[in-house]
View 1 (cartoon, rainbow, N blue to C red):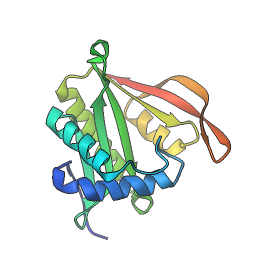
View 2 (cartoon, one colour):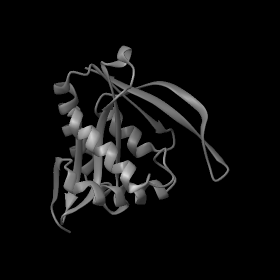
View 3 (cartoon, rainbow, N blue to C red):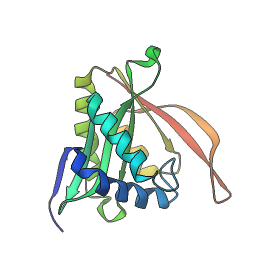
Length: 164
């Protein structure tokens, strides 16, 4: 396997990121998407994120994006101090410390960006992700019961946050 580089998202990564996002989404277990949005919508999101300077990192192996971690802004002025974290990794790259490397870079950049609160939602049964978030100091602030329904099965969402 090629070495993994953790680098800032660039326009050149968009198509590869879109493919990776689609693979993770189609697992139907981790993301709010069940498939990636259309490529042009993804391109617009990424370019907007880059334009605003929001923290967004990708794990790259052999020139292909295999994972990501980003922190984006909430839309309302009263939430200007809050970033929202999202991340994912292709199945073959999980359990190797890549998620740890991604989130460490993203959180360092988020602190530098000036946010004082980073929040996320994660399915309660995604124990590996919950453990990763706790390792970085995220705490569970609440549970949304039956917040997700995929293929007839309900799942709870944990609301987690980290304060700087």
